[in-house]
Amino acid sequence: MLRCEETAVFPDEARRRGSVLYRTLIPPGLRDQLKALTGPLFICTSLYGVPWELLYDDEEFWGLRYAIGKRIMMSRPLTMAGAAALRSRPRALVVGSDPRGDLPIVHSEVERICETLERFADIGCVSGKLASFDEVTAYLREGFDLIHY
Image 1: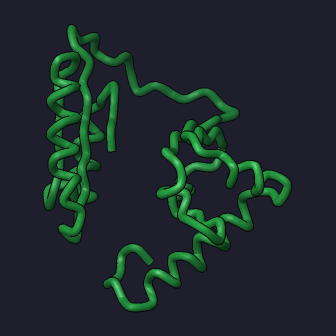
Image 2: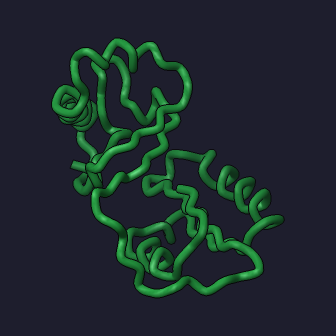
């Protein structure tokens, strides 16, 4: 759905699919409590790759309703490729995406975040048309201590 051209039915289709995800993943007894929540939502789950921001609760998409944080819980330990090199400063990657060019705030937000973080960390930044899947994936292979997207 997100990899095709935008059409007039896109908003309705996004709501329909988001509603299916919501009804499938969120138990009925928890729905009213979640709708009443006004602060950030931190999701701890073993489900990897779920687009929680796209869940639609018949009123709003979760990505608009909540500031969402995610933590993947695993039943097996992670295998490490090797010890990470110790650096004098942490490395941070800031990703700002606006593929259609209709989010003017993204550019200034990325600049503010980079300016704030550069006091504490070495910054990698990818934004605008450069924030393609391939480019961001290449950056991720470099290893960062903090990623903001």
